[in-house]
Image (cartoon, rainbow, N blue to C red):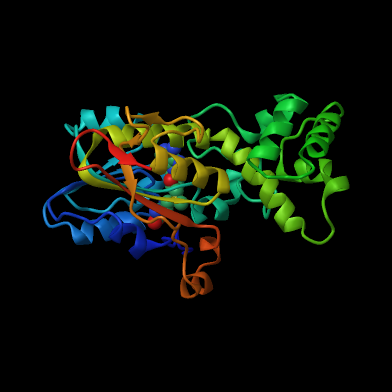
Length: 309
Ligand SMILES: C[S@@+](CC[C@H](N)C(=O)[O-])C[C@H]1O[C@@H](n2cnc3c(N)ncnc32)[C@H](O)[C@@H]1O
């Protein structure tokens, strides 16, 4: 059987949580459960709550009375924890994006390796699919997502080709999309191009940036003093969101709260100033780890805010 997902930066991210054996922890991206199993190994009593919006992840739930699984989006973090009687946590781990299982499942439409329906929903109960975006978004909206989420230099051209193509036939499958983009697909480097197009659509379908912001805000509110956030991202925009939030307490670099003396007030302190990336050994074993970036931050021990700067 194909492996569900090989956990990335496993030791570094779980070490980053500085686990208290009796603490309460959350893994908001349970997936194949690799990080969760490592957290459980380090707990003596304690509790771990695992979130995943994809019901297929439920097949990996460990048989462990300290573990609770929540099959929902992590944007509902506080609500579901409250439902389980948890108001404060000692640490939270997020390993963002999709799992290898998603890329390797032809029917989910996440990969350009298979000619499937353009789906790309992590939660198959949600309504908007990638097919909806390419058939219904305006050229301007498509340009924005290809530029911002796909970092494509020719985003407008790509968007206009899709809009032109769909006046003749709707775009339903991976093959339809590839056909529509034939004119702009590089002969060499087509994998990179498709990867950027697919990444852009996937981030929009799953509202990945908005939900990340919401989760980080809620996590910081319920984190105990001295508690840690350990976040692995795979896209420069995601990483920037995490970095700015850890450094300034804001998602917008220009906006920070300051005290009377002009010191920046922030609820978290970054533990690693330099981003942590996989070492050569991990990259040799797992090509999918190549874009991973880990950042760790700690909630202030005293008072509500740390003063930085
Ligand atoms: C990179 S995988 C995590 C893999 C996991 N750390 C492991 O070791 O197996 C990301 C997982 O998070 C889930 N996910 C992504 N965004 C989510 C969200 N907003 N809410 C809940 N689950 C999410 C995906 O369905 C996927 O299973």
